[in-house]
Length: 353
Ligand code: CP3
Image (cartoon, rainbow, N blue to C red; front, side):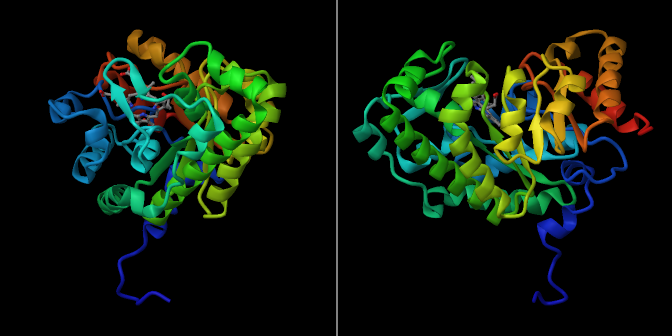
């Protein structure tokens, strides 16, 4: 039992938030909104603080993580913060030799190809990521009633960077392992699932109120291959997060054909990219909330064009168990932050019925 004069826990402070209520399928005061990649290069204050500091370096500095994560919350009044980090950060933390190159993305020095390569990757313990615990604790203190979304990369998407050695369009080497060396593949997926699960546990233990599992590149798979070679391990991660009592968002790009399976993997909220109208996604995801899904390029259109499309998405979202408004993928770096501010205001003032 907590002493009665103790500060309320992060969970108590955020319990009534529109974001967590929508994620749980409860009634909301307004449709909640946040943006994937809301922190980052679209914000001048981000570019200023990152001047001369490498991406990974900034992710491992709790003070910078707190500041960068807070920037879009202050600017936009979004309904949730997303922890500033990257999906490859836990790999870096356990000792995998990798870097995040500007304009390219994650690059892995020694790509994973054999069982020995997989076994050489250590499992993640909380000691590897003390700076994450520190940053999350600092953040939930500053955020008050605004929930923090922790996140991890899903096994398939992280495997793609590890096996290809960097970003890839076809994921050919990754799929070659999946089809041709199922034992190595299973070991790799189990390894990443363990790391992702442990990483989410650390974030939730430190105060994150929800988690998002990013399987950004799962849309490269057929439903059959997703179900056989990917879903079991994403399910492990999502079930582990679910046992911590926080809502789980599961997102990928180009996943029209996978939305049912991604929900069944253990999501409370299924993230939908902009290519799939919510009217089509909602019946497929079953009794779950949806997140999305304005085309990220619509913020470059005249404001009234953008808001008309946002209104269509808000109307469609009414049919879901819950709706968290978002873009259909991350904020494009050349986005005008003032246009995102107008979008947040529009979503917040849009009538619920
Ligand atoms: O605001 C947020 O959404 C939180 C921060 C965040 C980053 N990466 C910061 C980042 C999150 C949630 C991620 C996840 C991530 N990283 C994903 C899944 C989400 C998605 O976009 O589908 C993926 C696939 C990655 C891998 C990755 N890291 C890519 C493709 C890139 C972009 C390369 C580039 O420069 O265009 C990165 C680098 C990265 N991650 C940046 C940021 C802000 C840019 C680095 C910089 O500012 O120098």
